[in-house]
Length: 431
Image 1 (cartoon, one colour):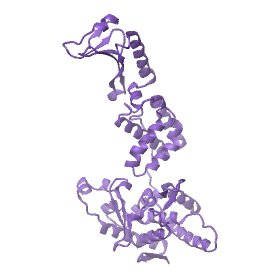
Image 2 (cartoon, one colour):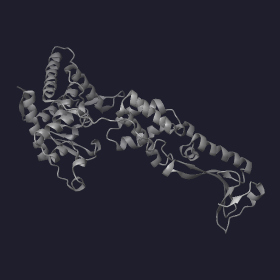
Image 3 (cartoon, helix red, strand yellow):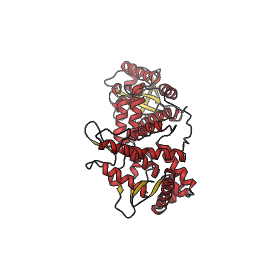
Image 4 (tube, helix red, strand yellow):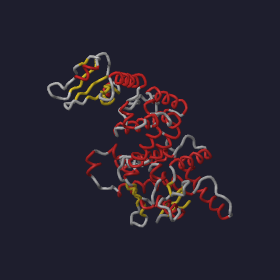
């Protein structure tokens, strides 16, 4: 850029070069630019840089028309903007896009992300809200976005490793990046201060599988609770420990190997028990890999769905309904299944077992029963890992026959483990 002396007369006499709009720098004032148009209009700008490394970008911030803003005022404004950028990390363009940036907090940005992205695109948005409420809200909820530094996020990351464990630490860093990267994509901010922030939590691979003895103890305890609760209801006394919904949900997980959130959020419209081959169809919006998943129901699984349907409120769309504070209908939260299993396993002295271990147990048992890998992948809806692009994208055959055979094989083995008579016509009974 050509340069002008820091002189009012020279600045007012500056003209476009070669009849084209020209930008001049001002001698001795870093970042100050005078934009001279062919019409004779002159506008002050500040040129500055944001971001780091490959993400570093040049930006311009408009100060005002030189006819109304003199040289001295332009210099003062330029120095204030540059100080904010270099010392405080404030991007003036962010001020313009977010309005009064001092009042635009991370909490407000999270709410925008949650309404416009999480609720629309994510299968389990409430999980993200819970992470925000438990950790990010306390630290950043009321903090203006330009005031959040990379070191602040790193300190939270390190603290969570000690207080909540490596998995929680990594999950919170991931959520922070999700929100901030979305804001970058939407043009609300220029860069994410935690971009490529290293995760320090070392996650151990989950490997807990219930033994056949633990499976028997677990299943028989649920059946005893069925009987005890029925006796208590008959006698006018409250039931024990686990609700019928929790008991059915846990058994469905052990029978089908599906994910906790998928079971908790079952809609009645997803289940067809009247078909010649009963099936539970999980829509793509509720699956982890965003692929529709059909779960053929073998007799024992069908019996659990029938039991849950009989107990469910008739005016609810959910198999396992609950009520929120405003009386609105909602499904059971996944954490309710976790709490139920933790309480039951503590009483049964089955150490270290959680709901996902039921899913891993089903996969392990199917492998021991000789079910082929590709069928196990289909049963667990791990298709993106174990099937090629051609199969995932172009093969629309549902493999219901193969999956049903695997489920029937597993149910026969499970009945043998727990000492139950193999179910027939949707009914299972204890031996």
